[in-house]
Structure formats: structure tokens, C-alpha cells
Amino acid sequence: MSTLALSLKDLRKSFGKTEIIRGVNLDVYSGERVAVIGPNGAGKSTLFNLISGRFAPTSGSVELNGQRIDGKKPYEINRMGLSRSFQITNIFPKLSVFENLRCGVLWSLGYKYSFWKFLADLDDANDRAEELLEMIKLDKKRDTLAMNLTYAEQRALEIGVTIAGGSNVILLDEPTAGMSKSETTRFVHLIKDVTQGKTLLTVEHDMGVVFGLADKIAVVVYGEVIAYDEPEAVRANAKVQEAYLGSHVADAQGAQAVAH
Image (cartoon, rainbow, N blue to C red; front, side, top):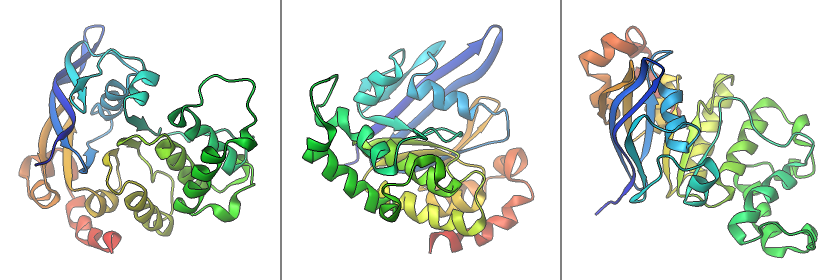
């Protein structure tokens, strides 16, 4: 029987008198890939910030693998098994691809704050970084400075850093934004590969990506989840069509091509 990886219960967030998240309830089971969609201003990024600890909720709770994490700091949540990427690429531009990945694995391997160890001598960290290089298909760019990668390669590196710590719950915030159609197709395959066996929650605007990647879709409108179901059920939902998909529903018929 599947276990809950992430559970949001009556989650609310207000800024002053304005309520942005309005009683969200959402259960994500281990190994599921869930896409969060909705119009601009729906509260998707705020929801991600609440889950990852950047914001504290006004009320309600967030549970990660059965433990409450609402109100904890982002680094504490990360060490409990949740990692996230951001809309804006967040890497070390003046470090090489390999060095970025090695930085990402250090804490999970027990290397905390130490000033008397040489990174080159940490065989387990170096081996894990090499594995990640191959996984994100940047092994040929091993010694390239991150700032000199293409945009798509930088996004791939960020995902590599995101999964480097071994978290079992991964949050990706618009991972394919700004990519060409061919880059997006390759990136969807990459996301599937690197999150195999993990739980994925992603905010995404590209309907092709959503229907090609997600096991379930949560539709957020005005801070509320108006639908949460398998892709075909969401696509057929009249409330969703009216609130968000509209004319894009027809375009989503071609989404299966992304999955193959």
C-alpha cells in the first residue's frame, strides 16, 4: 500500500488582509508525479513556498513523510528529505558542472562544516558527483563553468543539484520555462529519468509537459484546488476547462507525443 509522501491540510496563507491560499488539501503518495497548474496569480508559487519553508502558513499544516514541516526553515526541510528548484536558475556560475554537483552531495554524505579536508580526497562525494554527471547527461561538460552552459544545460544542472542530496520528494518550479519544443521534449525525458522512484511535485504551464509527465494534476484557482485527479479526468472536467484550460484543451491532444 502506498504511503503519503506529502500532505497539505487546510493550508492557508494571508498577506495582510489578502488571503492567497484558501484552505488547500492535497495528498501526494510516494512515487507519484503531480503537476500543479492554474492561471497566473492563482497561488502556485506561494503554495510551493509554503511547502518548502520559504513562507510560514497562516494556518493549516504540511506533512512530509508523516512529519509536520510547516514553520520549519528551508534547510531543515531539505535535510528531512525535500528539495526544490526555482523558476530562476539557481546554481554557482563560477564553479564547474562537477563542482556544483559535488557541493550538492556533501551534506548528505556527512560532510558538514569542515576546514581541514580536501574535496579532491573525498572519494564518495566525487563518485556520487560523477554518477550525477552521467544521469543529467552533462558528463562531456564536466569541467565547464556553469555560467558557460546553455540555458537548457543550466536547468539540467540545477535539477542535478536538486536531487544530489538524495531527497525523496522533489519540487520543480516551471522546469521547462524558456525552452524550445525540442529542448522541452528532451527535458521531460530527463525529469522522468532522474525522479524515477521519487515523489515529484511540479508547477508547469506547458500543457504538453503536464499531460506527458504527470500521474495526477492539481488545478489551483484563486488559492483553492478546484480539481485533483488523473490527467484525462482533469482534461474532461468542465470547471477546469472554464477556469484554466479553455481553448488549450484541444492542443493537449498532442501531449501524448511528449511522453513517447
